[in-house]
Length: 206
View 1 (tube, rainbow, N blue to C red):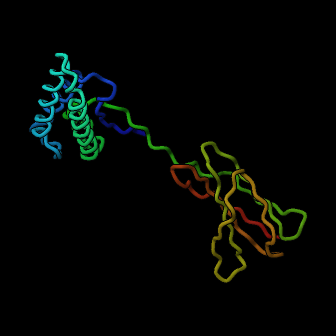
View 2 (tube, helix red, strand yellow; view 1 turned 180 degrees about the vertical axis):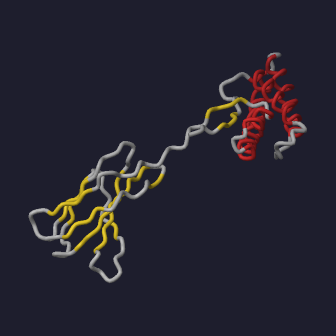
View 3 (cartoon, one colour; view 1 turned 45 degrees about the horizontal axis):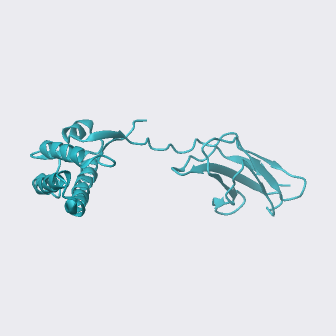
C-alpha cells in the first residue's frame, strides 16, 4: 500500500529571518509554475514578504514598536503559504514530480488504514434451550466491533436482518423459531469501514 506524498509549510517555530528565506524560495518556485493555479498569487505574497522584511529590519535595529506590526505581517504571510499548501496538495494528487516543482518540503502522509479482514470460521450451534443458537467465529486484530446478521430460510422471502453489534467474537441468539432453518453471516468493522462478510453458516433450530 503506497503512502500519500504531501508538502508542508514548515514555518512553525522558526525565526522571522528564516521564514523570509523560505517563503522567498517558495515564491520563486511557484512564479510561472504551470502545475498549480494559486490564490493568492506569488506576486501578492511578494509584497507581503517585502513589508515583513522592512518591519523585521526595524525590530532588529532596536525599534520594538514595530514588533506588533511585524507579527501581524508574519501571520499574513503564514496564512498565504498555508493556503498554497492546501491548493498544491489538492491539485498534485500525490504526484511527486508536481510536488517537487513547488519547492516545498515533503511530509510523509499516513497510509490509508486498511479495512478489517474477512471474518473466518463462522459456526453456529444449538444451545440447550429451544430456539437458542450460539454463533462464534475467529477473532481478528484491528476490529472495533462485529456486525452479525441472520435470515430465516423458511420465510417466503428470506431477508438478512441485523443482530446487535458485538465487541467479542461470539453472540447468543434467543427466541428464534423452533425447527426452522437459519443462516448467519458476520463482518468486522473498524474506523476505516466494514470488511467483507464471512462465509454463511446455517443451522436448523431445536
